[in-house]
Image (tube, rainbow, N blue to C red; front, side, top):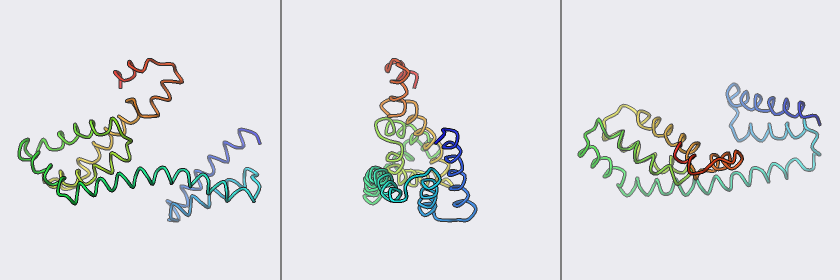
Length: 183
């Protein structure tokens, strides 16, 4: 099949997926399965291979993500239920004052985000973000959560040892030390 046709099928599939989820409120997982089957049929994949291919693709992806997210969620829950998040936030608020709690958490988030993946780091930090927003008496945890998510995403994309920047540095044959300093 021609590359242009495959590209158009891919773009159409993405548009259909978004339409199903946003406009028709189809649950994301169901929409993903429906669009996957439709895409496979549109590309001419034999019917007998469609379901095994979807199972293999989703199983591999969900298996990796579920492990990371599950362990991160458990660690975040331990921090929350042990009272560690509240104790940490009260201590920071007492020492720094409520106005500087967000900045302190942002710096701590940068240290946490550097060695681990974004999704795991964010899941670990969610209970801490809630506790810090209560300690700072903010109307919404989004006031702290969005800057933290932005910073951690930036670190994930720009600072080694994250796979994206390491892979692109290898392809470009860039000096990893210089990439790290610039990141």
